Length: 185
Length: 213
Image 1: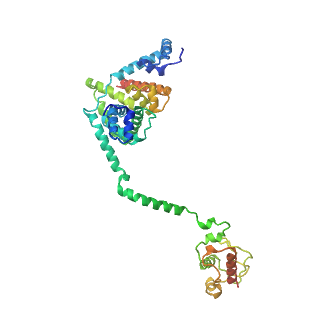
Image 2 (image 1 turned 135 degrees about the vertical axis):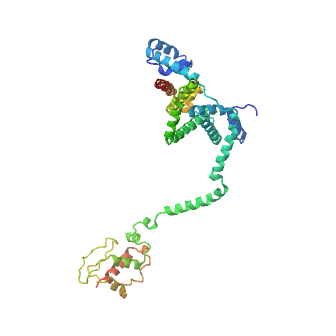
Image 3 (image 1 turned 90 degrees about the horizontal axis):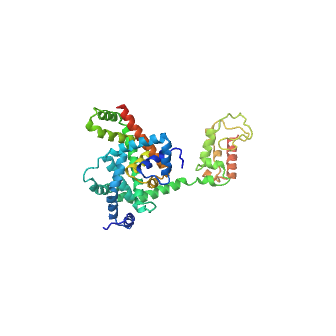
C-alpha cells in the first residue's frame, strides 16, 4: 500500500478496509509503547498497555471524527490506559506490601560502582512514579515525548499555563527526591 | 519587561523553546534575582542528570509481534463477548419481551384506586364475598351479653360501618351464624368490590337487624 495519511487510513477503515488498521498500528506502535513504558516502567506492563491501546483504537475508530489529530487522540488513549494500569498496580501492591519491602531491601544491598548507573535510573523511575497523575502525564509527554505544550494541552485538556506549572513542579519533585535519596545513602 | 518570578518558564528557557517575546524578560529577571538564578542552576543539574539516564529498549524483534498479538487479543475479547454467542442472541429477544411485559403488568395501577369517590370498604374487602364480611364482623365484634347496652351510633373503626344500632348484641356468634335470619339478602352482590353506597347501607342494616334482638 502506498504511504497514506492518517486521515486517509481512517477513512479506508471506516469504509470497510480492515487492513488500514494494521498500518496505523505499525505507524504508531513505537510511540505508544514508549509513552506507556515511561508510565509503567517495565517492558511487560508497557506491552500490556500498548496492546490495550490498539484494541481500544480498533473499537473506537469507526466513531473517530477528525476533531483532533490521530496522534493527539492516540496519546490521550495511551495516557488514560497507562494511568488506569498504574492504579490497578497500586491496588495490587497494597496487598503485598511486605513483599515490596523485601525487594527494596535486596536492592539496597552493597553499593557497587557497576550498579551505580542502574541505581540512578531506578531513582528517577521511582521519583516519576511518585508524581501525582497530572504532573506525571505532563512530564512524560513534555520531557520524553518532547510534545509542545499546545499539543499536550489538547491531549490532557488543560490550559498551557497550568501545564507549564505542572511540568516545573514535576521536575522540582524529581530533583528533591533524587537529592534526598543521595543524602540518605 | 520586569517579571516577578520566572521559575515556571525556566524549563523552557533551559531547553531553548521559550517564546521570543518572553525570553528577554526572563533573561533580564535572572540578572537581578538570585533566587531564580539559583533555581535555574539546580534545574540545569537535574535535567543533565535526567539526560544521562537511558532506559533499556524492548527485546529485539518486539515490534514485529505487536500487531499479531493485538489481533489475537481482539479475537479473544470478541469470543468472550456474551452477545457474540448465537444461542444467547436467540434467547435474548423473547426473554427481554417477557420481562418487559411483566414489568408493564406489575406497574399497572390497582383499578379500584382509580375510581373517583370509591367507597373505602371496597378497597379493604376487594375480592371478598358477603360471607367473608359476615365472618370478619363477627370475629372483630366483642361478644357481649344480651343485657349489655351499646352506644347509639358507635362505629366500627376497621370497616367504617355502623354495626351497632343501639340494640343489644347476641351473646354467642355461633348461635347467630346458625340462625336462618343471618343469611344475607339474595339481592346482595357476591363480590364486595361491586358494592355501592346503598348496598353497604343495606348490608349494615341487615347485619344490625340480624344481630339485634
